[in-house]
Figure 1 (cartoon, rainbow, N blue to C red):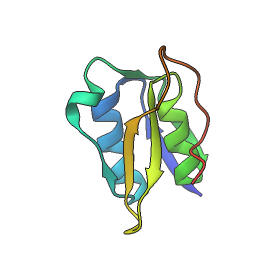
Figure 2: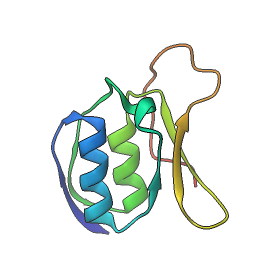
Figure 3: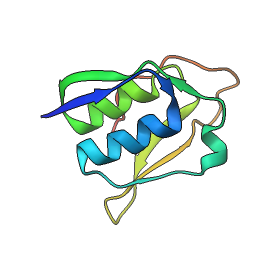
Length: 89
């Protein structure tokens, strides 16, 4: 568990703040984040749960690769923005 204080707003700066607060490595294409918003996250959470909260209601999902880095990718097969929960990794 870690303490997170990531305000609602544009997703890219929120993810940059998440990276600093979680110590996780995130890989994403800035173009995939353009125009996306987050509800933010505050409180004590496991890093993957906090990331899931940040990605909620976006068309992105988190996947972990063999190196341990987490990549944000468009959720396959989603034609519209749908609520998302914590990543399954």
